[in-house]
Length: 159
Image (cartoon, rainbow, N blue to C red):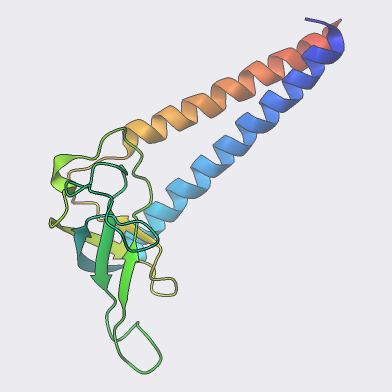
């Protein structure tokens, strides 16, 4: 690889790896904060529909690996008038290739949401779904991209 090309590729890889690692760190911190300090409620997994209200023909909810959850906020942290509001949101940290069978439409799961932003939701710590494999994948991808980029940049400065 020519020297300017190696330098350019190294910088791009290092920036990509750094951004990915920062995103992983912020995402893990947010999910940890929501699990410890969020408001815990029960949510129902609902079937996905398209933006125009037409059903996808996906009654088993397998098109998107992150389930669409429906839950009500608690009145004490809901709207200013003291009413609760209905929220439709996808939980953070769910990125498997297939949706686990425990998240089929109609299932009830425990979630924790942010009282200030009710659409920011995460599955409760007691649920059987773990985001650890996908977290490890993204962290390894970011680390390897950063290492590859730094080695290309180091090769440029060494020559």
